[in-house]
Image 1 (tube, rainbow, N blue to C red):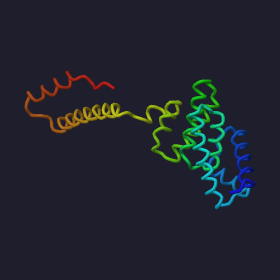
Image 2: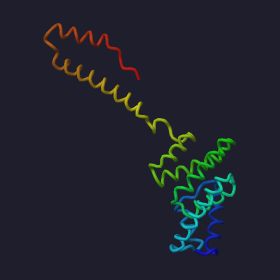
Image 3: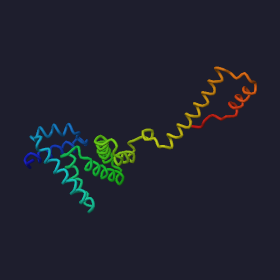
Image 4: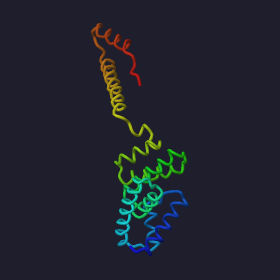
Length: 194
């Protein structure tokens, strides 16, 4: 990949991202790469450059030089839209910016990047946690084991009661004592609590 082909691509991709305020999807970036003359062979060089940019950005973040790191991470995301790490590092940065400033544009950027992480790796826990922190995953989508156990216990209780009702409704007990026990059971048993 030569600088003559990569720089116009990066400029146009960055302008697209900045102007629209939306992270370009992989298909849009591929189309843009073809429009600017990048070839399939150039993609390997772009990937290596994205890895280098990510490594440099990590070092800059450790040194608290966030502005330079953000520029490199944006380049890495645009050069290799399938790499998870630059997306996640950039998402965390924007989430931190949102928390400190309250600017919803930062929240939107963090959300888009975290969603892209989930698209790249659906079981990626850090991006799912970030989305939850940003309020983008509702509680019903992430049921805890305690909630599942409670629902199961309620359903088992209802099932046992229903089978008892069905059994004695279909074939009522002949013994009067058994009938009284069933009446007492249903009159004295409180309904399950939600």
